[in-house]
Length: 116
Length: 113
Image (cartoon, rainbow over all chains, first blue to last red):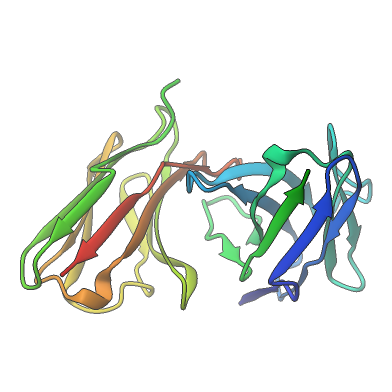
């Protein structure tokens, strides 16, 4: 079983500044994936970044990076040089790795507002 | 690639009516997922298929809900009879088995009055 917890329902940041969104998870799986998804007001779910648990190097995608602390079961998302278009709901999610497609388990979400 | 295609985008129906939501996954993806999103419960997995076979339907709320995947390019989620508490956004997502690049459709906003 997997659980994902996001303890920050809302956050705000000034344009061009850096913000970090928190996520903790629990899983009995030995290997798994972790994800951050973005949901803007258009409601489209957009994959922001993905991390394989067995990889120690933190994933990076342009202005987005993660701080993956496996022992602490923590997976935070850092957004650098925040832009107005980053305003959205952000969901942390996990999925066990296996030979078959597996379910994504989502956290509650963090509403991020970027202020001009 | 057109992505995951869901229809309709919006649906308003009266309580007791049958509702059918449709999904076309990305070509070549062999895992398909149906999620429901509400303010109260967040994103919940309803059911998922691998290679057109239902693997886990434990999230289907009750017998009023059914899902089918008759072929690799089409899936339906049916609610019969619909109730106001079924009002939500329903997402379809697809993935390549083992790839974990889940791609979501734009969702169907269902309102049952």
